[in-house]
Every structure is written in C-alpha cells, then in structure tokens.
Image 1 (cartoon, one colour):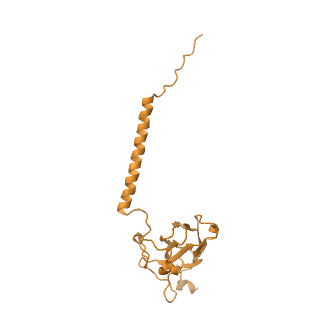
Image 2: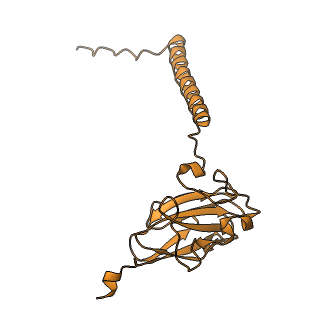
Image 3: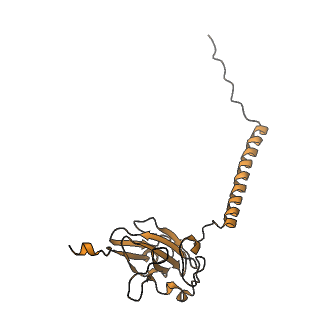
Length: 198
C-alpha cells in the first residue's frame, strides 16, 4: 500500500510581514486624510464651497446678502410678500436673468404661499427660506430637491413644461406637523393668441 503524501499546512505570516501590511494601510489612510483636508482647504480659499449666494447666477433684492437673510426680519425682504413677483397690473415681472421670481417661506408646518400660479414653458426662479427649523423642499416631477435652512436663501430655477398641478413637499422631518407641509404649483397654459381663436 502506498501512502498519500502529507500536505504541509499553509505558511502563516509572521509578525514582521503583518506589520508591513498594517504600515502600508496606515500610509494609505494618512494620504487620503491629507488629500481630503487639502481639498476642503482649497475649496474654502477658492470660494467653490457650496454657499447659496447671489454669485450663483441669481440676483436678490435688498437685504438678501450672499444668499443669506435675517429670518427674524423677513418683513424687510421680498419674502414679506410670498408669491410670484408681479407688476402693478398683476403681470409677472421678468428679472435680469430672463426668469420670473417667486418667493416662498417655509415655517410652522406650512409653505407660504399655499398655492402658486406659474405659466407653463417660462423659467421661474424659486427663492426659498425658512423661519424656524430646517425643512426639505422637493417639487414632484422635477429634479428640485433642497434643504431649506433659517437664514439661508436657496434659489432654484425650474421650467414647468405642461399645464396642470405640481406639488412641493417638505421631505425632511421638521416636527409633529411635518406631514402637512405641502404647497401647490398651478401651471397655467401659455397665453398664445393663435390657439385661443380655434
């Protein structure tokens, strides 16, 4: 009878080999930490950190400075009259960027205004702030989703293409009345004289 050759147990790493691997991984972690720190520092120095300000292509009126507003003094800002900015005749005003402006205020488990009428096919810049705590702002059917903080102004541009209704909800838990935070966008058909004469 022949005997099967005995297999040798797998070689175990000695203490010095393990120490080399641990040192290599420690070096990788250290390099990643340094790169992250340098990236954040460079972002702050260059001004490319995510600050919601007027330099992002949206102009604000009056006391809104660099995307910030005093949440206790909204009466001195365009947020005092939430809604679409209109002229004396009630017609929407186009701003310097070629969009309409609408101001919305989140607070006390509501959005103001509760209903906002906007025309279809026209870009609307929504300026949103909060008065009390952090809220979410998500417009259904669009890619608009922002965190709304007291004292900060989020400016978001959207074009509603089709007439009908869109809803904006608070998607960040803000307290016991969170489930009631909703506002409606009523999208009116574009005013075209040719289609009305049919």
